[in-house]
Image: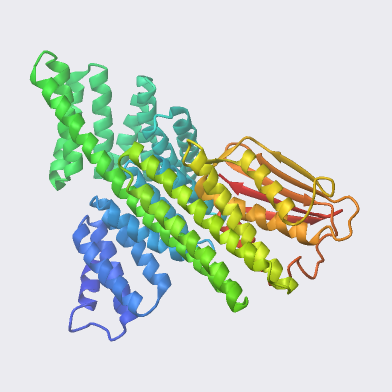
Length: 568
């Protein structure tokens, strides 16, 4: 009744007779009306109102409210299976949210992206976003979404057939919900626990959890929740050869699904009808034909979903990389005109490399041909970077100004750090991962000789675990190492009798690496850095670490130590 009244008054407020001249108020009413349509299951009407509200907020440059409407709009797209539109909208909202202090909308956005990825069958990507949901919920102290993210992680592990991990997450979610006495939400967790125990072959425990879940969802009038649980109980009874009970449960499910006519749930009901028929009529020859048809149909649908989802993520990552490179270019405009041009060329080449690589990856169809093309691409990029390095080296021979010479050498070392990556990609059979042990050794030796240190003049210690890192992370890690090692070689050892430089790269568990760069030089003054408070190189290091979602500590004790921790 309350929903009906709200629905009536919101519609009335937007009618020509009562419509306000205040567009902010109109946008708020449209958003509220869209939410009411969403709760009624009228997704087309909800999307129409949300879209109007979004246009008004965007025209008024009210980014916060526009972002909130985008999340609502994405949820409606998700409900009707428009996963591409949903993910595009969510990623646009996420671009705004990740530049703000953590808030509940960030938690909701991460969780909804994970849900879209789950629906599209990209379970690894879904897990990544559910982990982000859990971390953000813990930061904001949102206990409801801590339980929700654990519930969603458990469901995703269930799809991946990682049942022990699924149980660990779902049992934690169950305990939180029972403690909070959140009965309605508990029903979803109990249903998933029932599915997990059913997959493990523990039919008695599965039946217990599923029956409790059905009782909760029936009492709450949760029609879709009842449907899911009835279908799972039907599967369990068919497996236990309790066909009469399975038919009773399936009849209940069909009555519910035909009230609203959702195609996906109707498909599941009909599949269970077929499974029951197959169990009770094992010798019917038509069963084999229908089975094969269903397998082919599911395979084609999953393949189309995966391609669509991959294309969306490639576009989003391309936009993020271009934004990051634009920030670097803005910092570089303070240099002299001819230095700006040289560094600009290096940045432009990097942009081309990233864009070609990402476009290449998204359009990969023939593996053998694609590997050959990608290897040739890395060879050409390596040659172009080496040509640029040679230009910088030649230019440095005619420069007398010390600051300008250091700027050119810094640009040259950055280009070589990237060229070394592409040289290894060209030589190795693995076209995605970089052997960091070999790479760090070669980069360290190159920089030592570039800055005029001989083997007897400086002791270089390199300790690197045998870890392979994806090229998307190896390139920024190489640039970070290049800046820190170059800084030490340029400034730390002035008139030092026994200079020592130590580089360590070690794995910390299964999902982190730690990088230490340590020297025994003069140390960093509290008032300034080695290149000044406005150092382009150190700002770039800070930006790269932030982009990789890592953290850095600096210690000054008998020299300088940079300690960096990065997630893999």
